[in-house]
Structure formats: structure tokens, C-alpha cells
Image (cartoon, rainbow, N blue to C red):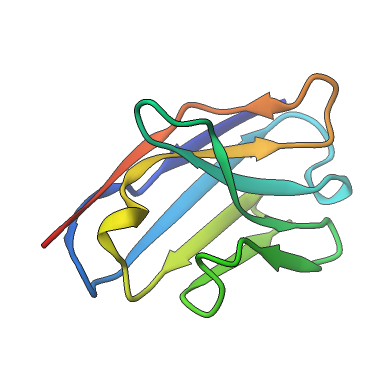
Length: 114
């Protein structure tokens, strides 16, 4: 299984971005996928997760602003990010957190400017 994130970029505070994650290999609908993010000097932190059946949960810091979704037929996962804040800046990684070891794809940079 491989995961590839895309869609990052530079956006002003208050703006929106939509990240995508393409999965290849494996049985996509059978496993939980998630978004994590990392800024230099800090540990990678959880953002949102979605199970194969569509159950979601979010970090408190993004609840109400971000929406995670998936399209199992396309083997795609998405993160709609609205009302972006400066502190949302970081490299965003799509992951399969329940794999052993957890599987991380290549990240995509999100930069929120004032």
C-alpha cells in the first residue's frame, strides 16, 4: 500500500484548501486512514481520521473547521480545511495509522499567511 498526498499550498488566514490523498494497492475500504501534520521542531500531531465505514473524529484544534472524507471507489481521501489559521501551517501527511508499523505517505506543505 502506498499513500500520496497533494493539494497543499499558500493561503491567507481565513481561507480554504482541500487536500487529497491517493492510495494504491491493498483493499482501501478495509482500513482507517488519517491526516497528521508536523511543523519543524514539533512532533507530528493528529488532525483527523476516518474509518473504512466512514466514522470520523477530529483533533479539538480543527473541529468545526476541517472535514475529512473518503471515496472508497476511487481509493481517495480528502481533507477540506476552512477558516484556516496561522497555526495550521505545517506538512500534512496522509497515513494508515493502524498498519504495523503505521504507514505514512509523502507530505504536502500547507502555509497559512496573515
